Image (tube, rainbow over the protein chains, first blue to last red):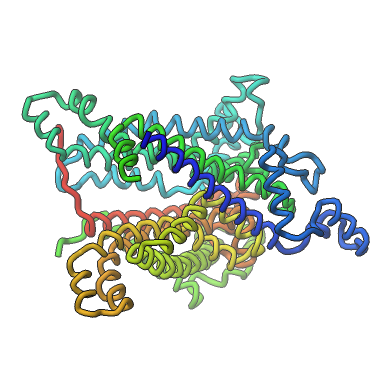
Length: 322
Length: 272
């Protein structure tokens, strides 16, 4: 019961954050300079034309009313109409979402698949008193290379020497899964370098934290083998920070995907947002940014649920505290 | 005092070189960044050690100017972040109550945006340029630092020396400034270092997309973005600034790790 209360509190607090995010985005978009009327109508528009346009998009109403209308519409799944293409933004976002999702899922999978074992291995093998400068430098390099640098380099290398992988093109997954994967491998690889390194570092820290626990000392004293100790005593106890990190990483990857899509010319949500900002396409910026923040918030609630399942102590403690 | 390990020293040395690089461009070392020195798109050679760009300008002085712009922008932004985060984090952590609630709510909202998405939103409001880049870095780095400073301040506030200061009649500014601030300074220093590397990456990404620093002014992001156009014919246009950018971020991260290990040492053990 307590737990249920805690969960509903958590959901409510997330909803409040999302509301705050929506206010911030709405305010930001209203503050953008150089009205869209100029963008849409060109420099020779008359005052009547501008007024007509403002009336059509509801821009002549009080700001609070506009916000209310917008929020109600978004709540009903209506993200408005692009001011440039006159197409519904929601449909366009929905069409582009699978690309960004595929990129992100591939990168998260890579970070779990490579980052976690790498972190466990380096932690277990670490000598007391630090050391391992090479390993630290390598994982440091992984978190230090921005996507736009790595992406540009990869595009350069693969434009000169195709090596069977194409850059700058894209094939829908539903049309030809193999060809789609061939075009997605490079962007996903660029995107996952950071995620893999961060996961490895966090896993390493978490495992090293567990290694000094008394129950590990006891296990070593009983003569259990290192890998038995890792499987039975360490992994589950070190899981919480790593799983929590995966939430943060997913959010980070949504941002990284934006850059990667731009560099590799993929028609995802990220490149949509970049284009829209350049063209002052208010509705698209509003919807795209809101979507990114909402995914992050929902993701974190799910991660909290997962952590509660992995480590029941946390859930009980949280329930007691409230 | 414990000696700094070799990696941290290396990071500091690399940073020192970059700062000298940037300062050198101020006094005109490396040449005029806007002067046309030779044919277009020449590979590195004498007279233009990092090659020439599409206008025949030498890339070296442009990279030097770019390092300066990038480092200066990020440093100023991080100082702003540190001041804001320290103030709000400490007050919220010490006072608690509704103020704490309010600060944490605002931070939570900012924290919900992926960094580059928030940066783009800021740039869209302020218009592309240096101000936008600066404001983006501040807003992107504030949430994490405020959270961690607040957590540290909560722990420090319950210490006996703080209680004893309050009992002996110290006023609030004195308690916060003399007793709480020095004890959360380590957190601020470590997070400030990491924030600097985040700032450099954000400036780079934003300028790369065309919403940050505007040409003809050079920043590392601007140079990489401009180089991208001629990349196939002249890869040195992105290699030079790219390597310098990665070196700067890596050096700062390494220094941050060293700082963290020194300020927050951990027990270690080996299983094998």
